[in-house]
Image (cartoon, rainbow, N blue to C red; front, side, top):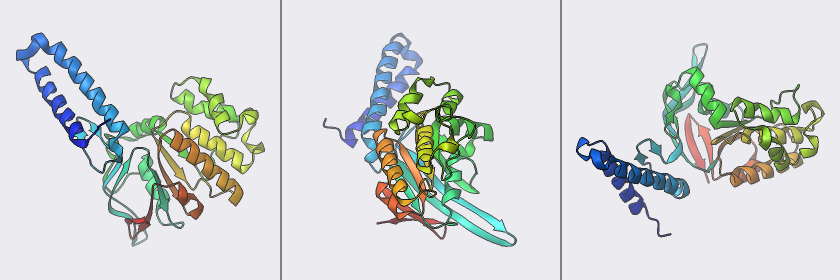
Length: 287
């Protein structure tokens, strides 16, 4: 109840001290007691960090614990067109906290999708590092990045990307099967997006708004830590876009997900904790 950063740092020091006892051969006879207390300290540290410290603008390491959920360090990316080099990102740094919704706003060709591809590990930066928690995805090989995406990231696409030969229910069961999760939760998630009566329908008989609802449910159903959304309302009319924005706002915030969304639509900006634009390869925060 009277949580302070000083108390948290004190707990970290206690935990560090206990670890030194655990691995000291002189204290073998009481090692179990130290180990048990150390485990309690570590659990408290993790709990406090999840519940409080993501709102604190600090970057503290506790073993492998990192308070920023997503961190870009000196990331650069460009591409060549003939003899011309186009710079998308130029030595950018960015920290994103747990539960934050970040909007990357800008016109087509400004580098929004390139940034999402880098965050997803689909593409790699020319320089720099990208961390999700304590995982540096730029240090992973292609197979490791694929497995990381499958488990930890949910995608919402502009053109839905539903599998046309699978029903609504089957589209949602696919990520569950890939992550060895029970199918029991599929109907609950379909109901959450208001499509339980359409669960046996195929994508080609659904409206654009209904398909995007399915895509949102598919992105969230395996309980990923991070959501990446690329123009999720870009293929919808105004009224349907507003419904989808409201749905994303309700479900993503209700589940406390960390989301990065790329968009050129001003209607989406109201969702954001922070709005960033890309200019000359750098992030600029909008007021």
